[in-house]
Structures are given as structure tokens and as C-alpha cells.
Length: 492
Image 1: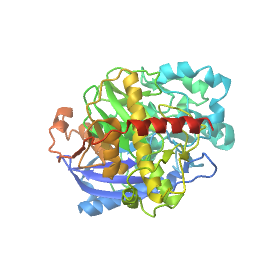
Image 2: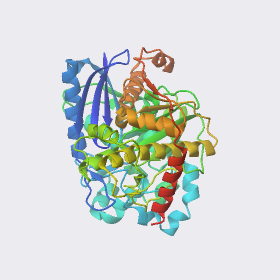
Image 3: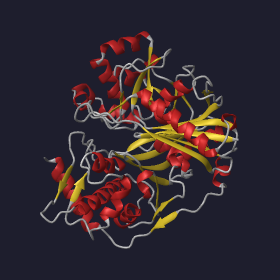
């Protein structure tokens, strides 16, 4: 009895096969292409995401050495806020998916009708107005692709986030559904009622009937079609946005439990219990998960847009490195940042600044600046961004953090996590399995399929010990200089 976990991230798809002890026995991964047609635009081809999913699942099956019939349940987790359009019958997409990092809708949101509605939107959704969220991306499609939108209004095309798209592909179009955590990131769902909000849909000109049905995170979403999904016939019994899945995968079931995922971006979430905690500190209130009885658990979230993506940019854009694994050794070639500070606003700044117009910068370059200084400044920038989030959490009145749990691809770097501990003055821990996003999807699916009866059973699983990084120095002065760099960059 194995659970197939599909983690469709921003740059690739990871598939894991997880057994009843919560151990991953097979893993597959396939990267897919990023498209940047204009400055500030980020797109994916949905078909490439689907093909990467198939390859990743085949890879996990091959590593595990098991038959497809061994899969008893499927869990899905995904990059959030990214929007796709697809034909309900053919499942083909008439246009690229607009990625969460995309900033093309900044001008739309500058319109008076949105500025006048900003507080109403925040109170209903827990989210600030920003191009980050799905709502304005749908509106951009309506205004710029009228032929596509006509088919949306006719009912031929469906709208959704990547979870709903994958669910449609896996079930051969039989199901058009999303989960409450993903829906809470669209800025179209009321986080108090857990339903699509008619006023918000009217504000952003999105027809409710084109959106997927909202379901709890645990329970049956549909059955995979063997003809469409590699001969696999199994129920999809768990689904969540990637950051909520990571929180669940970290077993953060108590109020105050927190984690930070260093993926393409960096995302700090704190469990706030059965009520949303609205914040005026640049943080978002979001649905963490909804159980089979319809009971919601909420989280307070801080979203950094660029984390691991900065490493990718150093590799693909500046070509300072040829492989991500080279960054840490390069950073260790120098003793400090050499006075160099990086503001990684490559897609604007997310929480707690929320500045969609700012662009990235390196400040403090001299004749003595070396490649290693760029590498070290990048690690420090990621840690400083998370420090800014935690300061905002404190200002919002959240429970104090005694430690920071971490996961995600960039958390493989010991230098990053040691820097993070020094910047925060707190222990930073990472689990032995950094794929806690996929593990969270497996846990949700396992609960939905009855593999585990409740969260207490999950906590009892024998997980291997992780690693803890404790502060060895303080970086208050450096953090203060970085905040000055942020202010200087925003004023440019």
C-alpha cells in the first residue's frame, strides 16, 4: 500500500511514493521550462507541466520497483496563485499559464476601483491587492485574450490553479475541483465562508461557473483514469497548495507552530488555529487546511518572491555558477560579504514590503568585489528577507518563535541555514526529508484514504532526526544595512 505524492512546483515536478510508515520509497523529478516573454512576465506551458508530471511519476515507480497497482491513494500539491485555462473536453490549454511571480497586472490593480476596494478585499480574503494573486491574472486574460475569454464564458474552457488543472488531467476531465487552501490564494474565495465570493468575482469580472468546486483538503476528489494516467487507477484523497502542504508535512498541528520553505520563493507560515488572523503588517491570512468535517485551520503567511530563484538566476542569468551546488563553495571562498548587499526584487518585493514596481539591485560593489561576494550576498539576502517576515509576525502579535523549522531545496545549504540562525538569533532546524511539501500531500491523502486515522497517528511516525543550526554570531548591523539597501532600491 503506497501513496503517490505529486508536487508540481514552480520549476519542476517531484513525485514520491510514501509507505504507511511515512517513508519515501521512490522519488522522481522532472524540470520544466520557464518562459519570460517580456520583462516582469513569467509563464508556463500547462502541457509541459503535465508531461513533467508523467515523467516524474514513472521515475518514482522505477526507483521503488513496484507495480502501478501498489498505489492506493494520490495526493497533489502545487505552485499556488498560478492560473491556467483549459478545454473541458480535450484538456488542452489555449494560452500559457500566468505564474505567481508574474507582475503584468500591476497597472490593472492601480485602477481606482481596485484601490477603493482594497480594504474590503483584505477583510474578505486576508490578502492585500497585488499581482501575486490569481484574481487580476484572470482579469488580464479577459481583457487581453477576448477569444479565449469568450470560450470561458460559453462554458467550453475552464479556469483554475495548477491543482485543478492536474486533477482534470489525472481524471481525464471528469472532475473540476480545487481545495480550500488553493482557493484561498486566488483572492476570490471568502476565507470566512470558504466559498467563492460573488462580490469579489464581480469586482475581478470572473464568472463563478468557470471556477472549480471548492472541496476540503482531505477526502475523495476523484479517481484517476488509467487511460490518461499511466495505467494508474487510484483515488485522489488529498490536495493542498505547496506551502500549506509543507506546514502539514512539518506536523505543525498546534497553534504557533511555524515553518519556512526555501523553494523558488521563501514562505513563512504559522498555524493560527480555527480563526483567521487578519494583519496590517504586510502578512496574509490564509486557509491552512480543511478537514473532512469542514473544520478549517488557518495560518498567517509571509511570502518572499525570490529565494531559490535567485540561485537559478545566478546560474542562468549572470552565469556566475554553472550548477546550483557550486554556490556554497563559492560563497565560502570569502570571509564575509565584502560590503556587498543584494536586494533580490527580481519579481518585485513580497511581504512585508509589497512593492510590485521595485527591481533588484546589488549595492556596495567595488574593485575588490569577487564572485564569492555575490554568492555570499545572495545567501545573506535570503536570510534577511525571512528576518523581515519574522519581525512582521512579531509586530502582528503572533506567538513568539523558539525555533524555525525549514525545508525546501535551498535548505540543503548549511551556509544558508547557519546564516539564517545568526540573523535570527534562533535555532534553525531542518528535517531529514526536505521534501516536506510532497510529504504533506501524502499525509493528507493518507488521512483521506484511511491509511492513518488522525493527526496523532502521523505524529507517532518514526521520522529520522534532522539537523539543528544554532546562532554563533549576531548579524544585527548587517541586517540594518540591508534594510537601508532595500529603502534605497525602492526609491530608485
